[in-house]
Length: 166
Image (tube, rainbow, N blue to C red; front, side, top):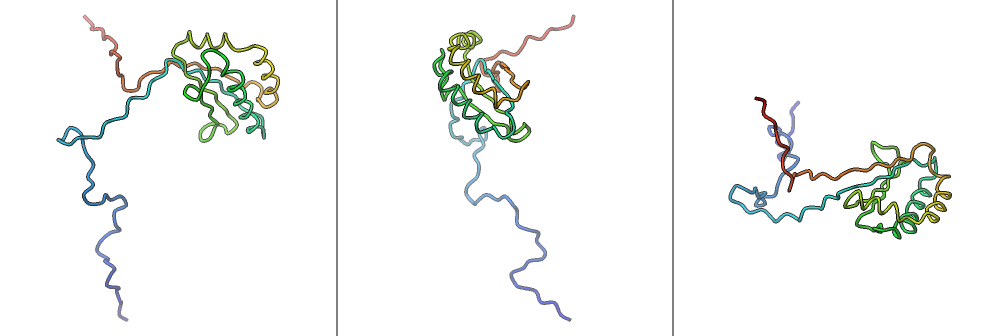
């Protein structure tokens, strides 16, 4: 019995490489005589990030998101400094976090600004909203956390002084 081999099949070569660059499109490498494209301006690092997280009851996630959006628009946007799309975000748990978890994160310049915000929230509006949201928040899960922003690239920060042993 004789084997017949197709002329377009090359059995001596492995499969084609998975990631190839088209000819003539070499990547520029700064520092090797090539010019790189200008980098976008660095993202400002907020001084303070305040996060409020809670888990919502089973089946109430969309209602909880709507109520959180209502608080941002009807309560937080009237406080000073006002919440807006540049300093406020809402996230929902997806991978590595419970799907029932919601998080409101707000960026402030300083702790003083955060305290001023908390002090200017309308208490009547906040309490009325609290009555609406209590049915969708799982008891014992609400948590406030406050983080100080740190520049991951160290721009403008001096290294800590090292002590020398005598």
